[in-house]
Amino acid sequence: MKVADIISLFDGVAPIKLQENFDNSGLNVGNPQTEIAGVLLCLDVIPEVVEEAIAEKCNLIISHHPLIFDGLKSITGKNYIEKSIALAIKNDISILCLHTNLDSVREGVSGKIADKLLLENKKVLVPKENSLRKLVVFVPESHAEEVRKSIFDAGAGHIGNYDSCSYNVNGLGSFRAGVDANPFVGEIGKIHYEPEIRVETIFPEYLQNKIISAMLSSHPYEEVAYDIYKLENKWNSVGFGIVGELSTKMEEKDFLLYIKEKLNVKYLRHSSFTNKTIKKVAVCGGSGASFIKEAITAGVDVYITGDVKYHDYFSIEKQFLLVDIGHYESEIFILEKFYDEIIKKNPNFAVRFTKINTNPINIF
Image 1 (spheres, one colour):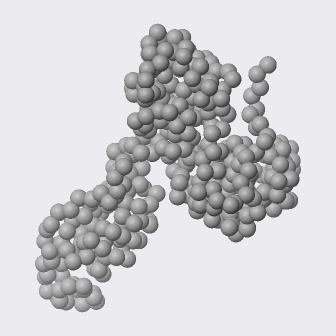
Image 2 (tube, rainbow, N blue to C red):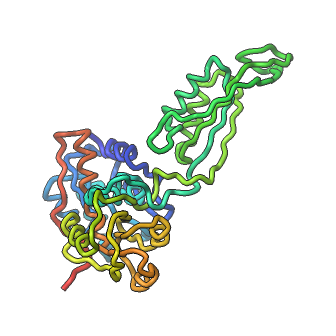
């Protein structure tokens, strides 16, 4: 198995093109054609992790946080990033980073927290915006099924838990073939009327080239009439955070103990108690304080995230319980997702969890 195969595997789970504009998910170091001897999983890449990979004979490191965020003008070993890069290159170790693309999928970072807390009826807290497109294509009746199948196979037609979604309207198309045309139906120089079906379907913007290519290859016409519309609909199955419900209500203090037990958290910070029971829960791995307003709108009883600032605790006005479990602590479970996806495809593959605690925050 090559590094490229692992990249392809995770692109099917959390496409790289779902990452935020500021991010640098993907292969940060290495050659995609390198044969993999073993994989080491971590949250952050630091020199000690690279040394561990060398000792364990793992020539691929998969991390959640990208090693390279900003542009590099030199690699002289002046910080942990440059030291890690130099050490990895010297020892032919590739580094694959899966960050906000994995934050954005339902079964990603926040989904793992929700699973650990046994939440039910899960939905995305902050659905992705400006990412959906609508394709409208006009197809002769004889080829409508073939064209629909091709665009569905390319990734169009997914709405929530449903696939192969389209709307179809019968109509009559007209055209006149020019002297240089090679018409599928009709004659040169004569207006032709053809029974056609208007096929409408939805798709994520990042798949546009693939879907259009599939449509054109399956469509019988020499010149295909189609339209693409940018939609303002939110993409409810992709985005940040998860909202779900506990099977039974819990008192606030009991729920804090529940968090510590289920998420293996020793310490947590929280806002003032609201004296309400906990039923509806929102979670967001990493730095999720910017989504406090969305949690309020969702009507949750508690919002669990990391990196909450001092004034954030005032902003909620006791509308719910705000809990900060820590950035590292809220994301560490994604390593289990890495492991499960690789082992599911390759049961005998050598995959190891790092033994290095890369959390830069210490509590005295």
